[in-house]
Image (tube, rainbow, N blue to C red):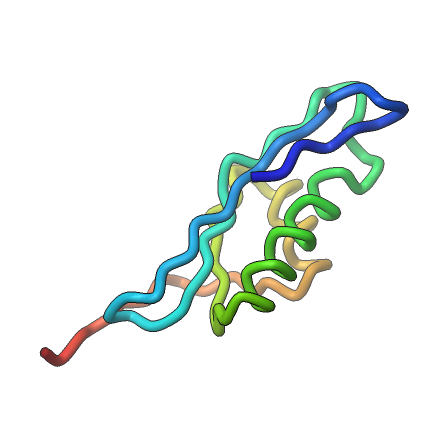
Length: 93
């Protein structure tokens, strides 16, 4: 979980879930929210990058998320995320 501060005031939050189960080490970034008056300052990108950095340092090999709109998708594209039409994960047990 991350809480973003701007001039000492909370302006954003996000979280990342890590899994190390059958699909392999992965990270899911979600819950990214920034107050309207703090948008356009890189807060969402900074929080997401920080969360991904920690997840990769802890062993995640893959990160995914689901942007709500085109503006959010542009933020994540700048971080290196790419839109895909969908994917399935199959596990042989």
